[in-house]
Length: 369
Image 1: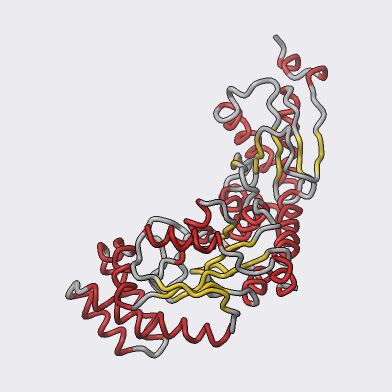
Image 2: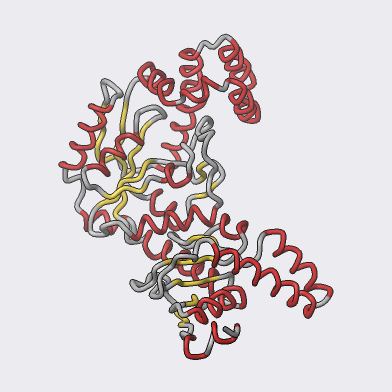
């Protein structure tokens, strides 16, 4: 059979240009940008079927500066090779009624090239108008508009009071929460990194955050753990941060001894990798706490964990918390003293918070305007 007959005109399905990626009839969102671009940020649920690899993208860019014509020839050869690979692998067994939505950086040649070939096969294909750029613009506008609508209540308290666990229990019983540390893959403290996890880049963090906010019930209050404006390497977006700063708080309390024990039980990975701790103590030195850093190092060398936890709480965490309290001056609408820091008490606290009418929702909404 002649090759031309395989892609004859009668089989071609027109490409649909859309300005919304949340379409019910789309089976798969496909990001055709390079892996590096995809890692920086992408539409939730999208997969990366690149038409140019990272190296190829750079090579075509360099060539374009010398000769746009040669760059287009080179790029076309790369694109056809990569699309062929995806057709043989991920797309190999897709049915005739498969409907993908493609996007690239600006809705240009990369996404349209892939969609054109798939349309020739017979699939209904959509291309996002404006590509990732239009999506990113929408994320920023949504974060600003939606942050103003949130009825936020901050779960506050010194380090080691189980705020994250209380937040998790609130979610289990159906309350709105935004878990910033989970989205940032960081506990938001000096020892807060997760060794096995890489933090998302700033744009992807904002995408994940916006996606979670859009799933909330806006008529209900939203619980967020007290954080600094920066969680590890990512910043809380300004609109949400401003809303958090003027929101009321629930203050969780517990004595330092119990909090030290709680930290030891929740930072097991650091005890297994003492070398990582010495790097973190350099932050204390930069803050002028040379003696504290020296003493912490001695405790780690001796594997004397409990005094280490107590010293860090007394000399670093608690002092930072006290300073933040003075800066924010939040209205405290409930105080809870925890006699024990375990799951039973966290569950009990969450239930108490959920069952208490903390504040008139209309008044809370007005306080955020």
